[in-house]
Image 1: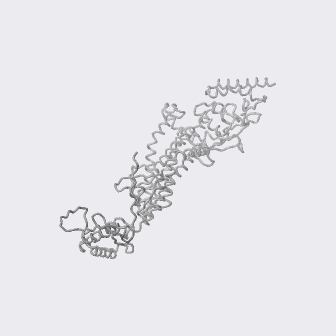
Image 2 (image 1 turned 90 degrees about the vertical axis):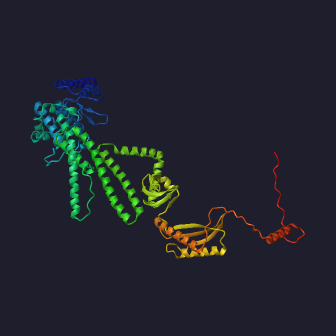
Image 3 (image 1 turned 120 degrees about the vertical axis):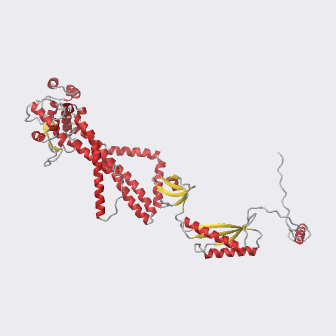
Length: 593
């Protein structure tokens, strides 16, 4: 019994393939699928059952239990039915295209083929929505599905699909309903571009590169500069309206920008205008899906560009407000927050675009997690610099505009980024120091000082008498105590040491100012007053020089020298009472080798 069943099944499949081949040659893929049907049926068909009048071939069931289209046309799901019909009609395979129609109440073959051609034109022009949004699930709660628009919208064309039994086994496939097909002639007559095609040269209509008429390709490419010009004009108009609105409310006008500038608003408007034009001329719905993906990428770039410009403007206003309030640390935090926000915007837009492109976002995120671990191990220094930058800004150790010393580098902080801190040195060079190094180095911030030390050393000559030196020091102390910019409590004038050529006097005082430029002015004034004191008191400043004296005077007093000689002799005489000093230990001479 099983052998007879397989023979009958093979005969039915071969008869179907012969009919399809004699009617019109099909594509190579369909022929291969039809030729493989007998081999599949031998392994999977348990018994032969009478076929239904609508379809003359038996159904095939996949290993998972879901039905498979016996003709290999992909009618198992609503999306497969719509895409399969568009692909077949676009390739002018009308015999395959009408297989997607509801098999009930079929018209003459010529009328069905005409319906297929008209329905393709309608879908290309009026179909609202995306093919990717159509359900790809074989079994739905209802056997009726409306895709591509909603009823009551004249410019859209609702496409109704119905799920029907194709054999006695209960196999169900999706078809384009007769209710939709009955509306095709009336809607087709209202289209404009099919009428335009009748007036164009035949080669522009018949030549179909990649299944799209040549005139549509030319229109798409030639409209690109027109869309860019219209987007640029729309951006200029929007800016002019914004200026009028700000004037009406008494706000400050926006800074003028070059009119030839093509910004994110112009790019966004140009992209939308071009997409509407492509939709208007009835470009192939199938290839419009690929164009839609390119459009999503362009819209994502335009949105990221526009949002980052907005965050820049907002951060700039906050930056200026904090600068007026002298909140420099908070200003640096605003800069870091803006950059982190820009990264977050990029990730959010990227994930949204990937989701719309039907990418497997959870798998991509899982892969990014594993890859991020590997990257993190290999980019430890990068993350160290990132965390160092955050710690610098949160601790407020330095902020933009501070004069500081980091390690052996000294300068003014120009920027604290996510990776490095930039210093403008006194030589006007820009030094970039990794934030990890900044966080672990000795950091000296000159902005946080409340006063600046002024320390000077005066070198007086040995010819001055002690009283003369005391007089000079008293005059210097009076000078410091009376100066308005000198902290009196910590100021001092002291004799430090005897050096080779001079007596050193230290002048130590704190100047009550934070600004280094003001400190230099006060220090200059103080030094000039010290010079006046030295001149007034007759103090002579020692110079690093050598003096040769030729004299007959004895530098050593003879009486004092004789007294010193007697004292030494008394210490050496053991019979003389007094303190006995032990002899020094003899030098130890190392033995000869």
